[in-house]
Image (cartoon, rainbow, N blue to C red):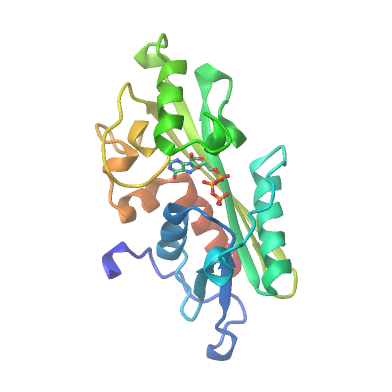
Length: 217
Ligand code: ITT
C-alpha cells in the first residue's frame, strides 16, 4: 500500500536502471522485514529475506558485544552465502531501571527460544516494583549494509519512551505492546500503523540515515 511507504529520498549514488538490484535481508523476523521494505524504498531495489532464498538459512550465532557487531555478523554471513548485497538490523530494548538490559539479549530475554509474549512477561515481572516515572527505556537499532563490492555502510537509530504496566495494541512485534514512545503520548508502539512506527522508530531512523548515506545526501 503506497501510504505505508516512506518518503522517496532518491536513488543511491551511481544508480541507473541497469544497476537496479536484489538485496538479501539477513533476518528471520517478519516484522523487521516488513518495516525495512516499507522504509528503504529505492526504485529498482528488491529486498528478499535470506530465508526466502534458502529455507534452511542458518541464522549465524549473534555473539557480538554490540548491536553493530551482531548486525555485521548477519550481513556478512548473508553476503557470503548468497553473493548478493546484504542488509542486516540488530536491535533491542534498553531499560534504565535494569541497567540497559535486555539490550543485545532482547530477543532471548526469557530464554533461547523465547516468544515475544514470554519476553514481555519477563520484562513486566522485572519492573513490577519500579514506579511509572522510573520506567524509562529506549529502542536502539544498528543497520549494516554490505554492497556487492564489499563496501560497508553503518547507521544507527534510537527511540525514547517508557515501559507500560500492561500490553496494548496488535501492531508491530516484540516489545511494541509495552513500549510507549515519547513521540506518541497515550499510544504504545503496537497501536501505531507501520508508517507511523517507521516515522518515529529506532529502525526507521537508522534506515533513513542509511538511505541518505547510500543516496549520497
Ligand atoms: P533477526 O536476528 O533474525 O533479524 P531477531 O528478532 O532475533 O531477528 P535481534 O537479534 O536484532 O532480532 O533482536 C531484536 C529483538 O529486540 C527483537 O526480537 C525484539 O524482541 C526487540 N526489538 C527490536 N526492535 C523492536 C521493535 O521495533 N519493536 C519491538 N521489539 C523490538
